[in-house]
Amino acid sequence: QVQLVESGGGSVQPGGSLRLSCSASGINFSMYVMGWYRQDPGKRRELVASISTGRSTNYGDSVKGRFTISRDNAKNTVYLQMNSLKPEDTAVYYCNAKRTMAWSTNDFWGQGTQVTVSS
Image (cartoon, rainbow, N blue to C red; front, side):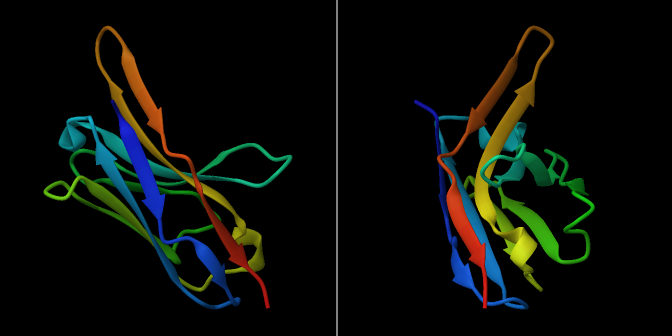
């Protein structure tokens, strides 16, 4: 059974920092592209950041220079360090694991963790 468990969300003031973690089980973690997405009610889910199996990273334009994604394959965990948080960063943040093969794609999601940025 595949599980992605996010942690580290919460409430923070503008300009503050949070570190999200996503612990994976039931998958060969090192072979998956890991990503963080976020979604506000009534809006589409958007990519925040992703990290490939070779540790190449990709960021959404709104978070470039403020957020950093990293992975620890020994711990089956992906992290999202969020600095200089803004009220518009408020959303539910979801962890994603994706592996594309010749014959199929495996695509798994966590349950989400709330991040609220407010004074």
